[in-house]
Image 1 (spheres, rainbow, N blue to C red):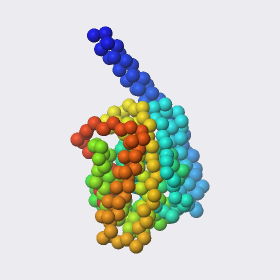
Image 2 (tube, rainbow, N blue to C red):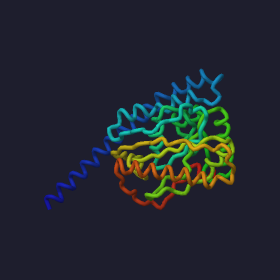
Image 3 (spheres, rainbow, N blue to C red):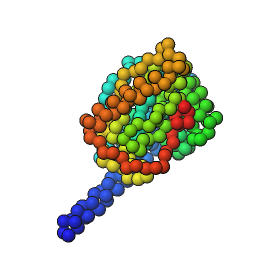
Image 4 (cartoon, rainbow, N blue to C red):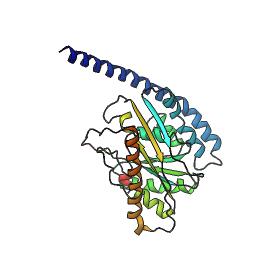
Length: 280
């Protein structure tokens, strides 16, 4: 009985520490977002005449993650792989999707890309304002017209020589397997003959479990994979391109799991739709 009691007390203490550290982590994020907002606004104002794609403002905005990674004791972030020499080529960037923290992790890469994002996030004070100043692309879930408009906006950003970032799974996976990849990102790449830049993420699911405000202790890594050219491809090649990229991400994710360890997620029957599932 005593061993059980001691174990219970230890678990309670562990949860209490996790809660305190989570409050600190959210506080750091909130303060960082608040302080960065006027900086991003000034950068956008100054560069607007010659930076139609808001590259400078977006690059500044993504750096809001630096204080979080430095001051949050629960999360450790790593990046691996090599970005193309010229990200202004531009690229259609795609990645698997584990949690909201994917955006924080990927933003550690020294580049800028416009994110296709749920409009609900872009309505948030400060965070949403910076996303709009950075010209990220909003999408209304369940609205077909919004999905079409979002892809049109992605085309416009690409025409400004700024890469765009899309999660082709459309929602975070609730099983160890990748979800089916929607067609939107690959259609965009083939139509404009833009190369695909795949990325694989691992560990962000443990950073923030679904339906739990508390942050988890975790090591997360994003790996940049080899670009996949689309020159000469047509819409008939879309399924093959999609399957190839999905296999690349799946293999890289398996490597990251072997490197860092993997705990299967708890199943959640409630799907969380994200943009590309409706833009495909």
